[in-house]
Image 1 (tube, rainbow, N blue to C red):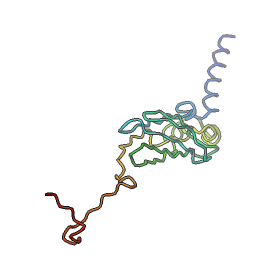
Image 2 (cartoon, rainbow, N blue to C red):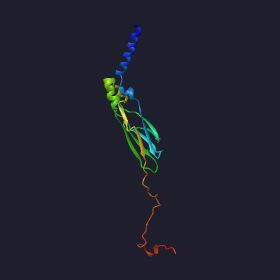
Image 3 (cartoon, one colour):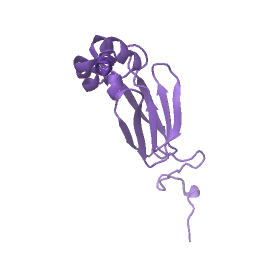
Image 4 (cartoon, rainbow, N blue to C red):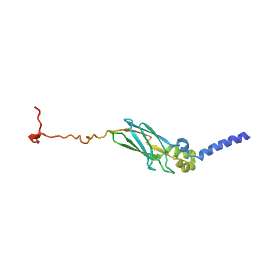
Length: 169
C-alpha cells in the first residue's frame, strides 16, 4: 500500500507542476538565437536593446545573437540591429517579440492554465517569439564620390580663349 501512495504522489506532483507552470516556459523558454549574416561577410554588427537603450553586443558577421524574448512583465523584447562595413551603405533591422502562439496560447489552455498564462510566461518572456529569426543583409556599395582635391574638371575647348588651350604638335 505504501508503494501505491508513492506512485500516486509522484503522478499528482507531476501534474501539479505542469498546471502550476507556464507551458511556453517549459516548451520554448529562455533566450532566443538570431542568426545574422551579410554578403560580403565581415560587416560590423551593433545590437541595441530598444527597451533600455543599451548596446547588447558588438561583433561581426556571421554571428548568432542570443537575445531575451521579453523585457519585463507582459513587455516584448525589441532590438535594433545595425550592420556597417566601409564602402557599403549602413543596414538597420528591427527584431521584436510577437506572441508565441503555439506554446503560450494553446499550451496554457491545455496545461499551464491561468498561472502559466498570466504569471509565469509573461514574467519569463516565454510568451514572446522574436521575429525575424534570422537576418541576411545583401550589403550595397556606397555611391562613389571623388576624394577632396581630386575633382575632375571638364572644359569645352570651343568656349575657351585660344591662349588657354594647349595644343600638342
